[in-house]
Image (cartoon, rainbow, N blue to C red; front, side):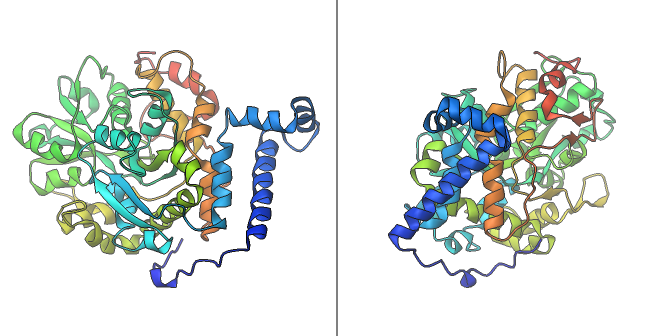
Length: 443
Protein backbone atom coordinates (compact mmCIF):
# COMPACT_ATOMS: atom_id res chain seq x y z
CA UNK A 1 0.00 0.00 0.00
CA UNK A 2 1.17 3.48 -0.73
CA UNK A 3 1.00 6.74 1.16
CA UNK A 4 3.13 9.36 -0.54
CA UNK A 5 3.63 11.90 2.22
CA UNK A 6 3.15 15.56 1.39
CA UNK A 7 1.61 17.62 4.20
CA UNK A 8 1.00 20.52 1.81
CA UNK A 9 -1.58 18.43 -0.03
CA UNK A 10 -3.90 18.25 2.96
CA UNK A 11 -6.94 20.49 2.66
CA UNK A 12 -9.40 20.29 5.56
CA UNK A 13 -13.04 19.96 4.46
CA UNK A 14 -15.18 23.04 4.71
CA UNK A 15 -17.42 23.13 7.77
CA UNK A 16 -21.00 22.03 7.20
CA UNK A 17 -23.90 24.26 8.26
CA UNK A 18 -24.90 23.49 11.87
CA UNK A 19 -28.23 21.94 10.96
CA UNK A 20 -26.62 19.71 8.32
CA UNK A 21 -23.91 18.66 10.78
CA UNK A 22 -26.48 17.77 13.44
CA UNK A 23 -28.50 15.74 10.97
CA UNK A 24 -25.44 13.89 9.71
CA UNK A 25 -24.31 13.25 13.28
CA UNK A 26 -27.68 11.71 14.10
CA UNK A 27 -27.55 9.51 11.00
CA UNK A 28 -24.00 8.36 11.75
CA UNK A 29 -24.99 7.58 15.34
CA UNK A 30 -27.91 5.47 14.14
CA UNK A 31 -25.66 3.73 11.61
CA UNK A 32 -23.17 2.80 14.34
CA UNK A 33 -25.94 1.49 16.59
CA UNK A 34 -27.49 -0.48 13.73
CA UNK A 35 -24.10 -1.92 12.76
CA UNK A 36 -23.48 -3.13 16.32
CA UNK A 37 -26.95 -4.68 16.56
CA UNK A 38 -26.54 -6.49 13.26
CA UNK A 39 -23.11 -7.77 14.30
CA UNK A 40 -24.54 -9.24 17.51
CA UNK A 41 -28.00 -10.39 16.45
CA UNK A 42 -27.99 -10.49 12.66
CA UNK A 43 -30.84 -9.03 10.61
CA UNK A 44 -33.66 -11.23 11.73
CA UNK A 45 -36.16 -11.97 14.44
CA UNK A 46 -33.73 -12.21 17.38
CA UNK A 47 -32.61 -8.59 16.96
CA UNK A 48 -36.18 -7.31 16.67
CA UNK A 49 -37.31 -9.31 19.72
CA UNK A 50 -34.38 -8.01 21.79
CA UNK A 51 -35.16 -4.37 20.97
CA UNK A 52 -38.88 -4.90 21.53
CA UNK A 53 -38.40 -6.55 24.91
CA UNK A 54 -35.67 -4.23 26.17
CA UNK A 55 -36.77 -1.01 24.51
CA UNK A 56 -34.45 0.88 22.19
CA UNK A 57 -32.91 3.13 24.86
CA UNK A 58 -32.53 0.44 27.49
CA UNK A 59 -31.25 -2.05 24.93
CA UNK A 60 -28.55 0.30 23.70
CA UNK A 61 -27.65 1.22 27.27
CA UNK A 62 -27.22 -2.47 28.08
CA UNK A 63 -25.01 -2.94 25.05
CA UNK A 64 -22.97 0.13 26.01
CA UNK A 65 -22.14 -1.57 29.31
CA UNK A 66 -20.24 -4.27 27.44
CA UNK A 67 -19.33 -2.65 24.11
CA UNK A 68 -17.56 0.66 23.32
CA UNK A 69 -20.57 2.20 21.54
CA UNK A 70 -19.73 5.76 22.51
CA UNK A 71 -16.15 5.41 21.36
CA UNK A 72 -17.35 3.92 18.05
CA UNK A 73 -19.76 6.83 17.59
CA UNK A 74 -16.98 9.27 18.38
CA UNK A 75 -14.89 7.72 15.62
CA UNK A 76 -17.71 7.99 13.09
CA UNK A 77 -18.78 11.50 14.08
CA UNK A 78 -15.37 13.07 14.44
CA UNK A 79 -15.21 14.12 10.78
CA UNK A 80 -17.99 16.66 11.42
CA UNK A 81 -15.95 19.43 12.98
CA UNK A 82 -12.50 20.75 13.93
CA UNK A 83 -10.58 19.30 16.88
CA UNK A 84 -11.87 20.51 20.23
CA UNK A 85 -8.27 20.58 21.51
CA UNK A 86 -5.43 21.15 19.05
CA UNK A 87 -2.43 21.40 21.37
CA UNK A 88 -1.59 17.93 22.67
CA UNK A 89 1.15 16.05 24.49
CA UNK A 90 1.84 12.40 23.62
CA UNK A 91 4.17 10.26 25.71
CA UNK A 92 6.70 7.89 24.18
CA UNK A 93 9.60 5.62 25.12
CA UNK A 94 12.67 6.06 22.85
CA UNK A 95 12.42 2.79 20.92
CA UNK A 96 11.79 1.98 17.26
CA UNK A 97 8.39 0.53 18.18
CA UNK A 98 7.25 4.13 18.73
CA UNK A 99 8.22 5.09 15.17
CA UNK A 100 4.76 6.25 13.95
CA UNK A 101 4.08 8.37 17.05
CA UNK A 102 7.55 9.95 16.95
CA UNK A 103 7.94 10.50 13.20
CA UNK A 104 4.49 12.07 12.97
CA UNK A 105 5.90 15.18 14.67
CA UNK A 106 8.99 15.99 12.53
CA UNK A 107 7.43 14.63 9.32
CA UNK A 108 4.23 16.68 9.62
CA UNK A 109 1.53 14.04 10.04
CA UNK A 110 -0.01 15.69 13.10
CA UNK A 111 -0.14 19.06 11.37
CA UNK A 112 -1.64 17.40 8.30
CA UNK A 113 -4.57 16.34 10.46
CA UNK A 114 -4.98 19.73 12.13
CA UNK A 115 -3.09 19.12 15.38
CA UNK A 116 -0.16 20.69 17.19
CA UNK A 117 1.49 17.80 19.00
CA UNK A 118 4.50 17.69 21.30
CA UNK A 119 5.91 14.20 21.85
CA UNK A 120 7.17 13.77 25.41
CA UNK A 121 9.97 11.31 26.16
CA UNK A 122 9.68 9.04 29.21
CA UNK A 123 12.35 6.80 30.70
CA UNK A 124 10.22 3.73 31.45
CA UNK A 125 6.79 2.16 31.14
CA UNK A 126 5.61 2.86 34.68
CA UNK A 127 6.32 6.52 33.99
CA UNK A 128 4.43 6.35 30.68
CA UNK A 129 1.44 4.80 32.46
CA UNK A 130 1.45 7.30 35.31
CA UNK A 131 1.82 10.34 33.04
CA UNK A 132 -1.20 9.15 31.09
CA UNK A 133 -3.40 8.21 34.06
CA UNK A 134 -2.56 11.54 35.74
CA UNK A 135 -3.50 13.40 32.53
CA UNK A 136 -0.05 14.89 32.09
CA UNK A 137 -0.21 13.52 28.56
CA UNK A 138 -3.30 13.41 26.38
CA UNK A 139 -2.52 10.13 24.65
CA UNK A 140 0.45 7.83 24.70
CA UNK A 141 2.68 5.15 23.28
CA UNK A 142 2.00 1.94 25.20
CA UNK A 143 2.90 -1.71 25.11
CA UNK A 144 -0.07 -3.61 23.69
CA UNK A 145 -0.84 -5.39 27.01
CA UNK A 146 -0.84 -2.15 29.02
CA UNK A 147 -4.29 -0.73 28.13
CA UNK A 148 -5.77 -4.16 28.84
CA UNK A 149 -4.04 -4.32 32.22
CA UNK A 150 -4.94 -0.73 33.16
CA UNK A 151 -8.59 -1.29 32.19
CA UNK A 152 -8.69 -4.42 34.37
CA UNK A 153 -6.82 -2.82 37.26
CA UNK A 154 -3.87 -5.20 36.97
CA UNK A 155 -0.80 -3.42 38.35
CA UNK A 156 -2.64 -0.09 38.76
CA UNK A 157 -6.02 1.35 39.68
CA UNK A 158 -8.64 0.30 37.12
CA UNK A 159 -9.10 3.03 34.52
CA UNK A 160 -10.94 2.41 31.23
CA UNK A 161 -8.53 2.69 28.31
CA UNK A 162 -8.88 2.19 24.58
CA UNK A 163 -6.27 1.04 22.09
CA UNK A 164 -7.34 2.29 18.66
CA UNK A 165 -4.22 1.21 16.77
CA UNK A 166 -1.20 -1.04 16.90
CA UNK A 167 2.01 0.81 16.08
CA UNK A 168 4.37 -1.97 15.09
CA UNK A 169 4.34 -5.69 14.56
CA UNK A 170 7.42 -7.86 15.20
CA UNK A 171 10.37 -5.62 16.09
CA UNK A 172 11.78 -7.37 19.17
CA UNK A 173 14.56 -9.89 19.74
CA UNK A 174 16.29 -12.03 22.32
CA UNK A 175 19.82 -10.68 22.70
CA UNK A 176 22.48 -12.54 24.69
CA UNK A 177 25.89 -11.51 26.00
CA UNK A 178 28.82 -12.61 23.85
CA UNK A 179 29.89 -15.18 26.44
CA UNK A 180 26.76 -17.20 25.59
CA UNK A 181 27.47 -17.77 21.89
CA UNK A 182 27.36 -21.52 22.50
CA UNK A 183 23.67 -21.46 23.54
CA UNK A 184 21.63 -23.74 21.25
CA UNK A 185 18.14 -23.73 22.78
CA UNK A 186 16.07 -22.14 25.51
CA UNK A 187 16.78 -25.06 27.84
CA UNK A 188 20.35 -23.73 28.00
CA UNK A 189 19.03 -20.56 29.67
CA UNK A 190 18.75 -22.26 33.07
CA UNK A 191 20.13 -19.95 35.74
CA UNK A 192 20.22 -16.91 33.45
CA UNK A 193 19.32 -13.38 34.50
CA UNK A 194 17.19 -11.96 31.69
CA UNK A 195 15.48 -8.59 31.37
CA UNK A 196 12.19 -7.39 29.91
CA UNK A 197 11.01 -3.77 29.83
CA UNK A 198 7.78 -4.24 31.83
CA UNK A 199 5.65 -6.94 33.40
CA UNK A 200 2.70 -6.14 31.13
CA UNK A 201 4.61 -6.39 27.87
CA UNK A 202 4.76 -8.62 24.84
CA UNK A 203 8.45 -9.00 25.70
CA UNK A 204 7.64 -10.63 29.02
CA UNK A 205 4.94 -12.89 27.62
CA UNK A 206 6.97 -13.93 24.56
CA UNK A 207 10.07 -14.60 26.67
CA UNK A 208 8.03 -16.72 29.07
CA UNK A 209 6.54 -18.57 26.09
CA UNK A 210 10.01 -19.38 24.70
CA UNK A 211 11.42 -20.43 28.08
CA UNK A 212 8.47 -22.70 28.85
CA UNK A 213 8.57 -24.28 25.40
CA UNK A 214 12.21 -25.07 26.16
CA UNK A 215 11.04 -27.03 29.19
CA UNK A 216 12.00 -24.50 31.87
CA UNK A 217 9.76 -22.69 34.34
CA UNK A 218 10.35 -18.94 33.87
CA UNK A 219 9.47 -18.29 37.53
CA UNK A 220 11.83 -20.94 38.92
CA UNK A 221 14.61 -21.75 36.48
CA UNK A 222 15.62 -18.23 35.40
CA UNK A 223 15.37 -14.70 36.80
CA UNK A 224 13.31 -12.18 34.85
CA UNK A 225 14.00 -8.57 35.77
CA UNK A 226 12.25 -5.40 34.66
CA UNK A 227 14.80 -2.97 33.19
CA UNK A 228 13.93 0.20 31.25
CA UNK A 229 14.98 -0.27 27.60
CA UNK A 230 17.56 2.57 27.56
CA UNK A 231 19.40 0.87 30.46
CA UNK A 232 19.58 -2.63 28.98
CA UNK A 233 22.80 -2.28 26.99
CA UNK A 234 24.71 -0.84 29.96
CA UNK A 235 23.51 -3.68 32.19
CA UNK A 236 24.57 -6.25 29.59
CA UNK A 237 28.01 -4.63 29.36
CA UNK A 238 28.37 -4.59 33.14
CA UNK A 239 27.55 -8.29 33.41
CA UNK A 240 24.36 -7.69 35.38
CA UNK A 241 22.36 -9.53 32.72
CA UNK A 242 22.90 -12.60 30.56
CA UNK A 243 20.50 -11.19 27.99
CA UNK A 244 17.10 -9.68 27.37
CA UNK A 245 14.04 -9.82 25.22
CA UNK A 246 13.82 -6.18 24.29
CA UNK A 247 12.56 -3.67 21.78
CA UNK A 248 14.96 -2.24 19.27
CA UNK A 249 17.22 -0.42 18.79
CA UNK A 250 18.73 -1.99 21.92
CA UNK A 251 19.20 -5.42 20.37
CA UNK A 252 21.05 -3.92 17.45
CA UNK A 253 22.86 -1.47 19.73
CA UNK A 254 24.36 -4.42 21.67
CA UNK A 255 25.75 -5.74 18.39
CA UNK A 256 26.98 -2.25 17.44
CA UNK A 257 28.78 -2.01 20.81
CA UNK A 258 30.18 -5.55 20.28
CA UNK A 259 28.89 -6.78 23.64
CA UNK A 260 26.05 -9.06 22.51
CA UNK A 261 24.46 -10.97 19.65
CA UNK A 262 20.92 -11.47 18.38
CA UNK A 263 19.89 -15.00 19.31
CA UNK A 264 16.30 -14.94 18.05
CA UNK A 265 14.00 -12.39 16.44
CA UNK A 266 10.53 -12.18 17.97
CA UNK A 267 8.99 -12.75 14.52
CA UNK A 268 10.45 -16.27 14.76
CA UNK A 269 8.25 -16.88 17.80
CA UNK A 270 4.97 -15.37 16.56
CA UNK A 271 5.14 -13.93 13.03
CA UNK A 272 3.19 -10.67 12.89
CA UNK A 273 2.69 -10.32 16.63
CA UNK A 274 1.66 -6.92 18.02
CA UNK A 275 4.20 -4.98 19.99
CA UNK A 276 3.53 -1.34 20.83
CA UNK A 277 0.41 0.71 20.33
CA UNK A 278 -1.31 4.07 20.42
CA UNK A 279 -3.59 4.34 23.46
CA UNK A 280 -5.54 6.83 25.54
CA UNK A 281 -8.10 6.90 28.30
CA UNK A 282 -11.69 6.28 27.32
CA UNK A 283 -12.43 9.62 28.98
CA UNK A 284 -10.18 11.47 26.51
CA UNK A 285 -11.71 9.66 23.52
CA UNK A 286 -15.27 10.55 24.52
CA UNK A 287 -14.61 14.06 25.88
CA UNK A 288 -12.75 15.19 22.75
CA UNK A 289 -14.19 13.01 19.97
CA UNK A 290 -13.01 15.19 17.06
CA UNK A 291 -9.53 15.54 18.55
CA UNK A 292 -9.41 11.81 19.20
CA UNK A 293 -10.36 11.01 15.63
CA UNK A 294 -7.87 13.50 14.14
CA UNK A 295 -5.09 12.07 16.33
CA UNK A 296 -6.14 8.52 15.51
CA UNK A 297 -6.03 9.23 11.79
CA UNK A 298 -2.65 10.94 12.05
CA UNK A 299 -1.22 7.84 13.76
CA UNK A 300 -2.78 5.48 11.21
CA UNK A 301 -1.52 7.69 8.38
CA UNK A 302 2.03 7.67 9.79
CA UNK A 303 1.88 3.92 10.43
CA UNK A 304 0.90 3.22 6.84
CA UNK A 305 3.69 5.48 5.61
CA UNK A 306 6.20 3.58 7.76
CA UNK A 307 4.85 0.28 6.37
CA UNK A 308 6.40 1.08 2.98
CA UNK A 309 10.04 -0.16 3.01
CA UNK A 310 11.18 2.60 0.70
CA UNK A 311 10.54 5.17 3.44
CA UNK A 312 12.56 3.46 6.15
CA UNK A 313 15.90 5.27 5.68
CA UNK A 314 14.13 8.63 5.59
CA UNK A 315 12.32 7.72 8.80
CA UNK A 316 15.56 6.57 10.48
CA UNK A 317 17.04 10.03 9.96
CA UNK A 318 13.87 11.73 11.25
CA UNK A 319 13.73 9.80 14.55
CA UNK A 320 17.48 9.56 15.29
CA UNK A 321 18.05 13.00 16.95
CA UNK A 322 18.64 13.46 20.66
CA UNK A 323 15.08 14.66 21.41
CA UNK A 324 13.70 11.44 19.91
CA UNK A 325 15.69 8.17 19.98
CA UNK A 326 19.21 9.62 20.37
CA UNK A 327 20.72 6.77 18.36
CA UNK A 328 23.16 6.44 15.44
CA UNK A 329 21.30 6.58 12.12
CA UNK A 330 23.26 3.47 11.06
CA UNK A 331 21.76 1.42 13.89
CA UNK A 332 18.22 2.60 13.16
CA UNK A 333 18.61 1.85 9.44
CA UNK A 334 19.75 -1.68 10.27
CA UNK A 335 16.61 -2.21 12.37
CA UNK A 336 14.12 -0.54 10.04
CA UNK A 337 15.42 -1.93 6.74
CA UNK A 338 16.02 -5.43 8.11
CA UNK A 339 19.56 -5.71 6.75
CA UNK A 340 21.79 -6.05 9.78
CA UNK A 341 24.78 -7.79 11.38
CA UNK A 342 23.68 -10.27 14.02
CA UNK A 343 26.84 -10.27 16.14
CA UNK A 344 27.81 -13.77 15.01
CA UNK A 345 29.73 -12.68 11.94
CA UNK A 346 26.70 -12.77 9.65
CA UNK A 347 24.78 -10.04 7.85
CA UNK A 348 21.12 -11.01 7.61
CA UNK A 349 18.35 -9.67 5.40
CA UNK A 350 14.96 -9.93 7.11
CA UNK A 351 12.61 -7.31 5.59
CA UNK A 352 9.89 -7.93 8.18
CA UNK A 353 12.19 -7.81 11.20
CA UNK A 354 9.93 -4.89 12.09
CA UNK A 355 6.80 -3.79 10.27
CA UNK A 356 3.99 -1.34 10.84
CA UNK A 357 0.34 -2.37 10.70
CA UNK A 358 -2.26 -0.47 12.75
CA UNK A 359 -5.08 -3.02 12.91
CA UNK A 360 -5.77 -4.15 16.51
CA UNK A 361 -7.31 -7.60 16.10
CA UNK A 362 -9.39 -8.70 19.06
CA UNK A 363 -7.63 -12.06 18.85
CA UNK A 364 -4.31 -10.35 19.64
CA UNK A 365 -5.83 -8.99 22.83
CA UNK A 366 -7.27 -12.39 23.71
CA UNK A 367 -3.87 -14.07 23.35
CA UNK A 368 -2.33 -11.45 25.63
CA UNK A 369 -5.08 -12.07 28.18
CA UNK A 370 -4.46 -15.84 28.06
CA UNK A 371 -0.84 -15.22 29.00
CA UNK A 372 -1.81 -12.86 31.80
CA UNK A 373 -4.01 -15.67 33.10
CA UNK A 374 -1.39 -18.35 32.46
CA UNK A 375 1.27 -16.60 34.54
CA UNK A 376 -0.94 -15.33 37.34
CA UNK A 377 -1.12 -11.64 36.46
CA UNK A 378 -4.92 -11.91 36.63
CA UNK A 379 -6.91 -14.28 38.80
CA UNK A 380 -10.25 -16.01 38.41
CA UNK A 381 -12.50 -16.02 35.37
CA UNK A 382 -11.60 -13.73 32.47
CA UNK A 383 -14.19 -12.57 29.94
CA UNK A 384 -11.68 -12.58 27.10
CA UNK A 385 -13.93 -11.37 24.29
CA UNK A 386 -15.62 -8.64 26.30
CA UNK A 387 -12.34 -7.08 27.42
CA UNK A 388 -10.81 -7.39 23.95
CA UNK A 389 -13.79 -5.62 22.36
CA UNK A 390 -13.79 -2.86 24.96
CA UNK A 391 -10.10 -2.01 24.60
CA UNK A 392 -8.90 -3.00 21.10
CA UNK A 393 -11.01 -0.82 18.77
CA UNK A 394 -10.85 -2.97 15.65
CA UNK A 395 -13.99 -1.56 14.02
CA UNK A 396 -12.86 1.99 14.73
CA UNK A 397 -9.48 1.32 13.16
CA UNK A 398 -11.18 -0.12 10.09
CA UNK A 399 -13.24 3.06 9.75
CA UNK A 400 -10.20 5.29 10.20
CA UNK A 401 -8.17 3.35 7.63
CA UNK A 402 -10.93 3.52 5.08
CA UNK A 403 -11.59 7.20 5.77
CA UNK A 404 -8.05 8.12 4.73
CA UNK A 405 -7.96 5.78 1.75
CA UNK A 406 -6.38 2.56 2.98
CA UNK A 407 -7.60 -1.00 2.67
CA UNK A 408 -8.60 -2.51 6.01
CA UNK A 409 -9.17 -6.09 7.22
CA UNK A 410 -12.81 -7.17 7.33
CA UNK A 411 -12.47 -9.59 10.27
CA UNK A 412 -12.00 -8.43 13.86
CA UNK A 413 -10.33 -11.69 14.92
CA UNK A 414 -8.07 -14.30 13.38
CA UNK A 415 -6.50 -17.61 14.26
CA UNK A 416 -2.80 -16.89 14.82
CA UNK A 417 -0.04 -19.32 13.91
CA UNK A 418 3.08 -19.50 16.03
CA UNK A 419 6.41 -20.53 14.52
CA UNK A 420 7.64 -21.86 17.85
CA UNK A 421 6.04 -24.23 20.33
CA UNK A 422 3.81 -27.28 20.54
CA UNK A 423 0.48 -25.44 20.51
CA UNK A 424 1.13 -23.57 17.27
CA UNK A 425 -2.34 -22.36 16.29
CA UNK A 426 -4.17 -20.03 18.63
CA UNK A 427 -7.95 -20.04 18.30
CA UNK A 428 -9.42 -17.01 20.13
CA UNK A 429 -12.73 -18.84 20.51
CA UNK A 430 -11.05 -21.47 22.70
CA UNK A 431 -9.02 -19.21 24.97
CA UNK A 432 -9.48 -20.99 28.29
CA UNK A 433 -8.76 -24.36 26.70
CA UNK A 434 -5.56 -22.81 25.27
CA UNK A 435 -4.43 -21.69 28.72
CA UNK A 436 -4.98 -25.17 30.14
CA UNK A 437 -3.06 -26.77 27.24
CA UNK A 438 0.30 -25.62 28.59
CA UNK A 439 2.00 -28.02 31.01
CA UNK A 440 4.05 -25.17 32.52
CA UNK A 441 1.78 -22.46 33.94
CA UNK A 442 0.57 -20.91 37.17
CA UNK A 443 -3.14 -20.91 36.26
